[in-house]
Image (cartoon, rainbow, N blue to C red):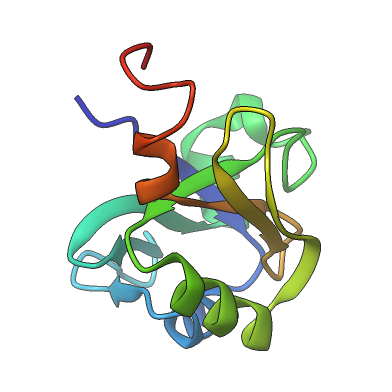
Length: 135
């Protein structure tokens, strides 16, 4: 079962353009003037939704007093790690350069226009890491 985040963004057009520069596909078929939500796909797989902050606050009023962003990060597991890192680094702010963590997985971190942190991890190195068989 997939766990798909719906992230509040200040400007859906700016966020969509940012993610498209990174190689994501933005599917806006569901977006309307009153429900500005866009599906975010990577390599053809749904990985998140972008929702205009003002409309999300109306849809779920308990979020209205919460700041945009959150304390945490989203991970994207990629097969073509080196190319992905190069493309992402050229089009986003890198907040942690590519490195190998304590489990043997290569990863890097960038931020999007609203400050969300996206971690890219190398699917191949993850398959050969200490995490094999655990998750």
